[in-house]
Image (cartoon, rainbow, N blue to C red; front, side, top):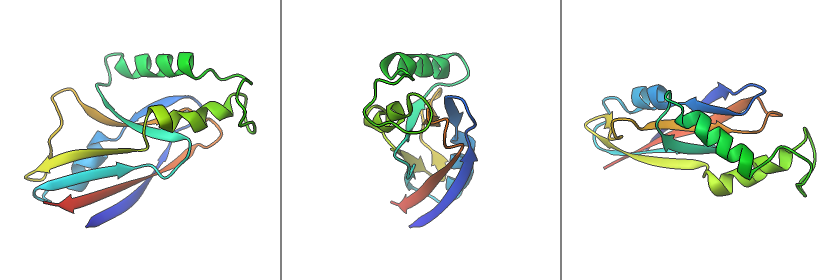
Length: 134
C-alpha cells in the first residue's frame, strides 16, 4: 500500500477545502485500486460533493444551523462553540474511499473530495492519502 500524509492550512473560518487535485496527482499512474482519504483529527471530516457553484457554502450553512457556534455544548474549551467541531465527524465522517481506474479517480462529473473543518482553533490539518492496489 502506498501512503503519504499532507498538511493543509484551513485558517480561522469554517471551510470546505477541495483536495481533489492533490488526490488526483497522488493516484496518477497507480493503476486500479482504491484511494482512501483519512483525516486523523477529532474535529474535521471529508465530504464528496460539488464545489464552486454554492454547494460548499450550502454545506457550511447547513452545518452552522445544525451545529451552532455557541455555548450549548458540553465539550467546552477553546473558542465559543468548539464542542460542535467534536460532533462534526458523526455527520461528516473523517474518511472517504474512491475507486481508481487506470490511475484516474472514478469520481462523477461534478464530484470533488473536500476537507470540512469548523474548528477555528486548529488552523493546520493532516490528511492521509492511501492507495490500495486492486
